[in-house]
Length: 212
Ligand SMILES: Cc1cc2nc3c(=O)[nH]c(=O)nc-3n(C[C@H](O)[C@H](O)[C@H](O)COP(=O)(O)O)c2cc1C
Ligand SMILES: Cc1ncc(COP(=O)(O)O)c(CN)c1O
Image (cartoon, rainbow, N blue to C red; front, top):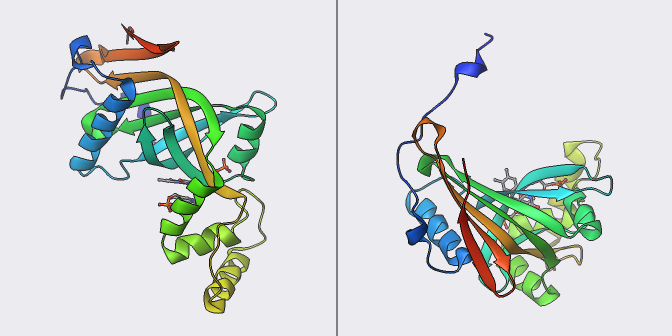
């Protein structure tokens, strides 16, 4: 069946945004929205799309899970430093994150500089992961070509049955995106959405409204 995608649309009717409801540091408001997403049992509430840029100025994006948020150290996620995103971040330190919680008709866009977390911070998170996830992080050369899934499964089984201690590889760890722009978007009826944007200006954050 060849569906007419041009007529697939939903109106957003649930909530609205006033400038007056954003009185704290914007990162605190991100945490509030994320907590609401968790409370509403939204699937993968901590998932965000991370965009990075290649040496040739080509953007690419993929979903990652945010594992910690605070006003000072930003938005933390964990990955393989030798992956495609890792290589891009090595050359261009800027990135963006996008949360979309469809059931709440909300989007948050975040932009800023991405820094590696310390090896100690990465160890703490790595050691907290389930055993199988540790094994996968160790045996998977993320973003490299592999001949077959079987090779991956053999490597996984072989490490699992060896009972070796599972130590974090040096090329696996955390990054933090330190925000300098955060936009809160709430869907409204007839595409007349609300957008409140914070931009960093020295030690302060300027708050403005953008047209939808
Ligand atoms: C819901 C979801 C969560 C994911 N979380 C992560 C993550 O936290 N870290 C990660 O390295 N990959 C994660 N992935 C896989 C990435 O989207 C991506 O496939 C992988 O990191 C390789 O990307 P790259 O080749 O651009 O480096 C996740 C995928 C999905 C769909
Ligand atoms: C390859 C990979 N690495 C890391 C993560 C981060 O999440 P967790 O530490 O909860 O596995 C994910 C989550 N889907 C993932 O797919």
